[in-house]
Length: 369
Image 1 (cartoon, helix red, strand yellow):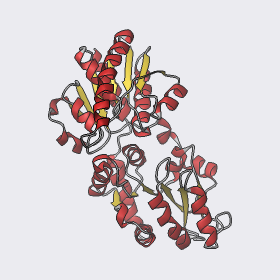
Image 2 (image 1 turned 45 degrees about the vertical axis):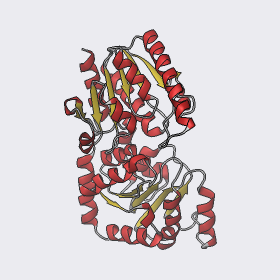
Image 3 (image 1 turned 135 degrees about the vertical axis):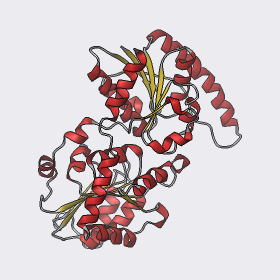
C-alpha cells in the first residue's frame, strides 16, 4: 500500500497526519508513505524526524484583499499544481489524504483530477477554507465534530471520525505520571496550557491565580507557560513574594515534553480550544475551562469551545473577558462542586473519540479495496 499524506503549517495539521499514518500501518502488512508539505512549515522539521519520506511544494494562502501578493500567490499555486502532479505520478499512491493547511490544496486537487482516491480530515467545527474548496473534489471527508457537516455541500461524502490522538495519551497512567511529574496524589491537579508557544492572556491571568491558590493543601497547579513567557511569569511571582520552589503546590515549566503524563493527572484543564488539544482532553474525559484564541481563522476555536460547553464538558471564557479575578472565580466554583466536575468529566468522555485514527485508517483501506 502506498500512501501520500499532506498537511502543514501547524502541529494541529501535522500530528493528526502522523497518527493516521501509524493507524494505517497497524492495519496493513506493508505500507510506503510519502508526506508532502512546505519548507516553511513545522512539518519540514517534524516529519523527517518521524522517519517518513518528505517532499515539498511551494504554496501559500491568499490575503483577504486585492493585492500584488495575491497575483504572486496565483503564480506559485500554478507551479505547485504542476509539481504535485510530478510527485504523485512518480510515487503512484493508492490513496492521498489531507489533514489541513494550504499545502493540501494543490496536492489533493491534483490527485482527485488524476482519479486517485482522496480523503480530507477536518478537525474543527468551522472548516478551513482549503478543506471547504477541496470538499467538492475529494471522495471522502472525515470530520472531528458532527457540527462541521453543515458547512460541506455533499453530505454523502462525510463520516464523523472524531480527531486523531496519539496512542500515549491513553496509555499514560495516573499513578506513574504523578510520580514522574513530582505531584501529590492527594491533591486535585489543575493543568494550565496555552499550547506549545504559550498564551499571553492566560499566563497573565494566572499570575493572580497563583497568588490566590499558593500554599493550598487540596489543589496543585501544573502551569506550562511556553518558552517565551516563562521568565516573565516566574519573575512576576517573585515580585509578589511567591517562591514556586517553596509553596509546595505550584509547578511552572516553559515546556512539557510528555504531555500525555500531564493529561493523565489532570482533574481540570485550562486550555485554548484547538482541535487536537480538545481531542486529547475528551479522550481522557477531562473537564475544562476554555479560552479560545481570538485570532484563529474564522474564529474556529470559539466554535470548538461552544460545542464543548453546549454538551456540558467545558466552561467558555472569551479571551477579551479573561482576567485573574474571573478565572479564580470559575476555578473556585468548580473545585467547590465535585459533583459538577464529575458531570463535566462524564460529558467530556462522551464527546471523546479515542479510536478516530483507527476509523480513518479503516475508511482509507475500504476506499482502496
